[in-house]
Amino acid sequence: MIPMRKKFGAAFAGIVYCFCTQINMVIHFLAALTVILAGLYFHIERWEWVALTLTITLVLVAEALNTALEVTLNAYTRAFHPEVKVAKDVAAGAVLLAALGSVVVGYLIFGPRLRGVF
Image (cartoon, rainbow, N blue to C red):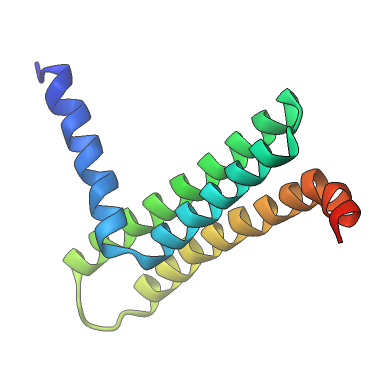
């Protein structure tokens, strides 16, 4: 049986790999940090924090899974393969869908507050 420390270490190594190799993961993280700071500034409600937490997590998880799929497919073949391209495109599309959904959630939460600022 693998000790819990090793399991968490492997998971943490995967997260570090994403941040060190995927610029989009860094961009999503910085966007999340900006949204968290905006939430603190505007004193958003508890349910809004729940919505933001879920959407931030969804985007970061989608990006991590996209990275895992790309690394796996690259290990399979470096040559062009139409089905590999489709798989990579679909995974990237999943990240885009999550990111667009998070923009909608952000607009619903911050839109009315920002209208009052500008």
